[in-house]
Length: 84
Image 1 (spheres, rainbow, N blue to C red):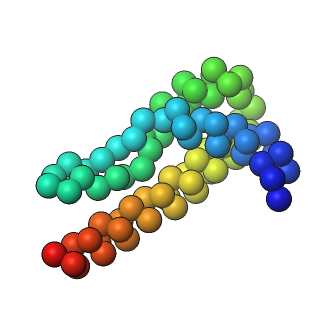
Image 2 (image 1 turned 180 degrees about the horizontal axis):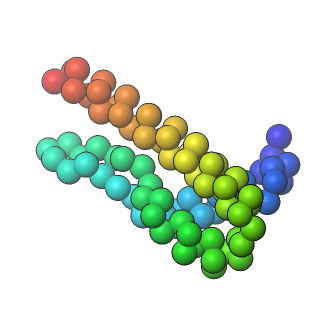
């Protein structure tokens, strides 16, 4: 399966994800919290995403990607803390 096999809102979500700002929990070892999704609606306008169903699908994909990255980041931080 390739990226072109997905619906357009999913493809756009992959592109938009890279434009969203990163969030970190500061401290001695900063923990990556994922992307800040608050600017997504502004980026939707740039990409011309106006249909509500397309927005929902795109947001769903963004959240799914973000949740996966967050989960990996937390697992890595937890493993790192166990070795200390």
